[in-house]
Image 1 (cartoon, rainbow, N blue to C red):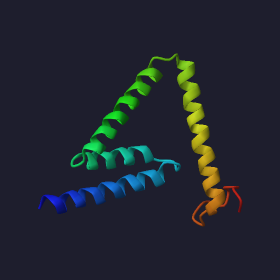
Image 2: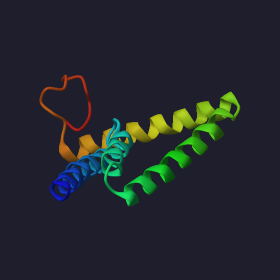
Image 3: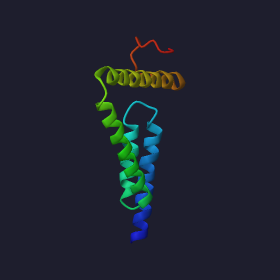
Length: 110
């Protein structure tokens, strides 16, 4: 029973991680999905548990660093993040085309 369960956890966790990796460049919770997949994998695999601990450690370091910065640095980081997400949206719409359900006033490559 243990072996098929481990295989199932590996498949489900791997699919969640793969979905997260696909979602990383798109607006949304790509990294959160990857971390959720690591949580699933870490229930059965030691390497995933180590990777999850490594990830949590670095996310905490980043969060601590950002919260220790002056407001103008945090605003600059927020603006850079927003510009990046906007750029990804524009490139994605350019490559895939503007969906037909999008309002006509959206001037992107119609």
